[in-house]
Length: 399
Image 1 (cartoon, rainbow, N blue to C red):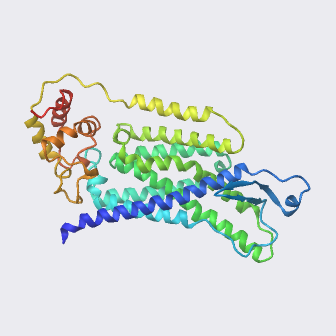
Image 2 (tube, one colour):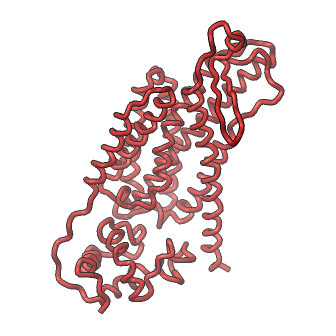
């Protein structure tokens, strides 16, 4: 029955990843909507009934064939409504499924997914400990910064947090594989986001509700603090979404300065998000998306691979020997590498035709980025990578 374990893990990976995406869409969608709502509502007319009721803003919207008139109270309505909708399980479910996915994909196969002996010769337990520790350190530092005097200055807080995340990425890339370092920065940000909901936003809202139930006037400070953390979550969103898909783009996490690459991409995501937040308020400032696009354009140029040097032709028999020895343990219709029940991404290299069809991907992932073999489990040498590159440059022929 042991042979079914990788197959079962594949299904577990699939189902948890699917659920993670579903709950993530629900959480991010609600976050985007309420930030848009806060930035778009307009104050009522002076002396109007709405102002007398304590409404600080409202708007009219049409969607799905109906009209909506959401209103926001300055602190709280005069009476607590009988039915009150809370937004919390979207956040909790997203983090729980993401944490489960971290275990299934990375922690259960740490030697392949987290350890890179060219960086640090760690045991599986050590690498997992570093990963889990980063989540705890990340939340603790972020929460302390928010509660410090720095937390009262949004721009300064944002710059310091960016520096902290880039520094964290630098540290992690000196212990874990680039791919694992990236995903743990994403998990760190996700933990900060759900921590905001669990530790501050929801408790603050409960205090306001409890005050109303006790016939007291709610303290507005709870709403102010919750709004600040909610805005932080909004700016975290685009960077963490990139990190969720970064495992498909080894040109970023495999770069020698992958930590800095991630920092630039996170900065671009934050300034682009700032553009939309300002636009909701009626301010269209194109300098922000242009700055984000410029950062990404510069990064694209700097990461471009160099032109390969001319090399002697390499016979296909030698190429096939390298592929058979170093690649087909995973990339085969029947993988023998532990943890795989099918070739990753359906990319098999059993036959000459399959090798020829996959030549471009081999050149990119194996030669240029050195992202494969995964964690170099099969000990591919630089000479073998050079031979594959020369074969590709000569036309990737199989005769």
